[in-house]
Length: 152
Length: 83
Picture 1 (cartoon, helix red, strand yellow):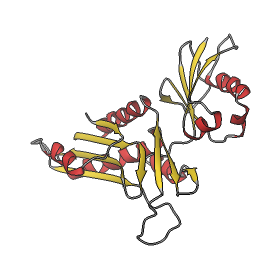
Picture 2 (tube, helix red, strand yellow; picture 1 turned 135 degrees about the vertical axis):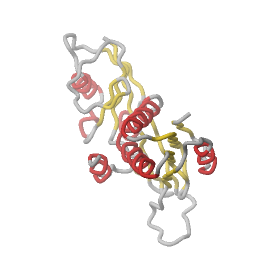
Picture 3 (cartoon, chains in turn purple, yellow; picture 1 turned 45 degrees about the horizontal axis):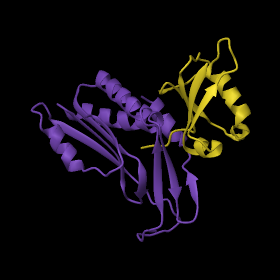
């Protein structure tokens, strides 16, 4: 399965091993997005009561990710694509999303990986809510994400 | 004409429901816009919301002036913030 939407965590190495198991693979590029420290606490000590909750639109989420994968494959000659996105309750520093692309040569894998995450940011129906232990708020969309996507 | 309406994230909280079955009173050629106007009459609090996005049958819409049919699924939600 090239597109996975799941609550549980994922392991990068396992995905790399899967993509590597193809004689045509000459390059693998991967991207992982993590929950950043969104609280006001500065430093390395984490606020243990802070967490993020990710909501999504089951059905449309998978459909939109598959559509992004399909456009990617039309644009670049890539061998394999993996997109894993989590939902539910996540702590600061947890993994949220993984995009991994394999190809014969590095350029296609670099381009495709960036293209996928740029489109995922604006087209795949996920919403983040941050809880700092006292208050919660929905994360605002970032205009830079739209500008970045429009550059493709 | 029956439309299945879904709300996500902030809009789900504002409306207080995730899923609403809506019987359209408009009988000619209703669009996603028509549906939203009717839904806004039912849930007045939606009138205060800015930057609402919509999907028709799980396809993101850039133009709400698109015709709907009986049994369609329309979702309304705030801008996407995944990744």
